[in-house]
Image 1 (cartoon, rainbow, N blue to C red):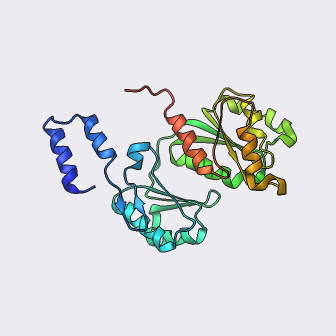
Image 2: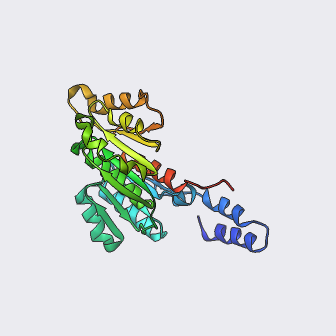
Image 3: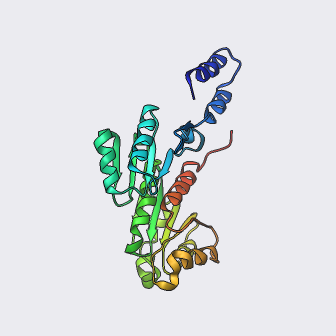
Length: 254
C-alpha cells in the first residue's frame, strides 16, 4: 500500500464514484510488503479478522525483529507463535511495552490491542501434558476477542472428571478438545453436547501413538458428529477457528 493508492480510493469515495463497501473491497486486497525473506500481509485482519501470524521456528532473531519493526511502523499487529523466551526477551528489549509474551502458550504479540471479549470458548484437555498446546489455543482465542474457560485433565482414563463438569459445556459457543494417546476425548465430548467441537490431536503418548498420528486418525474416524479436526499440536489453528465461529455467531450476510 502507498499514499497515492489510498488517496485515489478515498478521492473516488469522496466523489461518490465508490461506495463505502467498494472502497473497503479495494483496500482489503492491496499488496503485501516484501522484505525479501518474508512478505508481510498487512491487510490480513481487515480480510480475515485475524492479525498477521508468524511461525517463529526456522526464523532468525534478526528476521523476527525486522518483521516486528515493520508491523509497528505500519501500526499493524503481529502474533508470533512457538517463540522462545530468549527471542521474546530480545523483542521486549527492542520494543518495550509494545511486546507481550505468554510463556505457557509460547506466543508473543507486537502492537496487539486488547479487544472487547465476546462469546465463550471452552478449552478441554485429556491430560496435563496437553496443556502447552491447549494454552496456545486458549491465548489465541483471547487475543482474537473471545472469553475463554479452561477444563484441564479430564481424559477418558477417569470419566467422572469429565461428567462432573458437563455444565461448562452449556455456556460455551465452541469447544476445543485436545488429546494425545488414542485421541478418544473429542468423540466423547461431541457425543455429550450440541456445541461445535474442534479436535486437536497432540503428540503426547507412548511409541505406538506415533507422535500424534494415532490420535489424529482416531479423531478423523470418530463416529460422533459435529467434530472438526486440525493438525497435530496445532493450538493456534484451533484457537483461530474457534474465534471465527464465535465471532460470526448470529451474523447475517449483507
